[in-house]
Length: 480
Image (cartoon, rainbow, N blue to C red; front, side, top):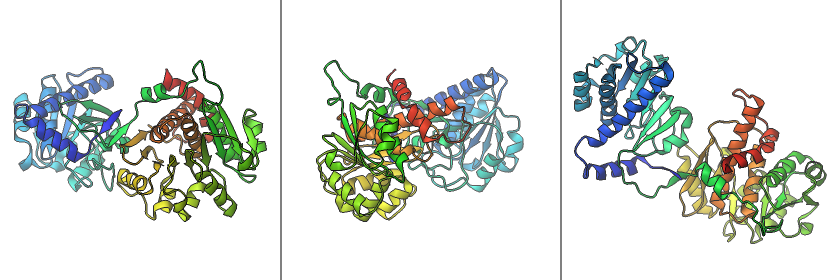
């Protein structure tokens, strides 16, 4: 798994590192990694390194020192380097000396920064590091707003919170972010601000993370695949209660996703049976729960309604000892009657978007989405998948998992119905609920990306139909 560490965890690991290595060594390691990546970026963008021009935006403290040391190393490669000191009196002394000795230009007047940086091929953001909080200060904000060249962030984009990814004002939007020693939550939670992430190891000894991401290979390697002795029952039988005569599409999407996610069998219970069978004749459809037969997981909610009858069907499903995925209308019902789910012994996966999360808890997720999703999971003793570009999955007593989709192709009506179907299929196959939710989110995002490229979409979201049709290709891609 990829691991993410808070600012406090990284500072503690740095303090321990300082006891093992000579003074200044961690900064020089970070700076060397930063300079190497800047040089590679110059080469890929401009065809060379020597003779290129790089600007440094330098704040106070160690983040500015990283940028200054990296600038001195770039100078030795023939790069013209200009450092704009936003707080000249607090600039990192050793880094500043190194840059001056290497022949770098120094600008101590922020008002002249845009003129000094004119013609730069790249600008390094060394304004603030993991100790910084809040948006850019006025001088820095003015300079960043006036730049029209790609920026490479040292450790994290300045103005973006390192632990929550929150942006509450002017901030750097980087093309590349060079993470020193460890990835921080910002790198997953605010990916559009970070650009491509490059990790530079500096020798930190880090604890078990509280935030992590499944690697694509782990998703593909753990996906249920039929063995020589498997049959349709041993591969997982999924029960779906979704859709209605008014909203049959939700039933089709959710059931179709369970089929595409390699379930051994899918049983549908509800009034949208004819629409489901028209698309998926392999599904066993019945009008009510009593006639469904044996299943190994349930999915309830997409298009199911919120009347008394729907509430009773949800209560009946939650009274079983089977894993249950609750989405959409099911979440609305739980917000009204949370005791239906609290205290269940079997796995329960809730899949809210931000608005549904607010209805469940009485408050918005807020800027610290990781803390919010963890609190709901612990309080209700369920697994919670909070949707978003950075989807978060929390289950009691385990690290929160994050899936950064890499885009917003799946931000479309019906995409959540597809996601619920995939989670239900993995639960029926015996996968642990947090893993099932995180793996489903990864496959879902991959299918959306493949569909978008197949359709030639620009920046617009795709529809749920193409996403569903590309699920098998996404699974195959991750298993390759």
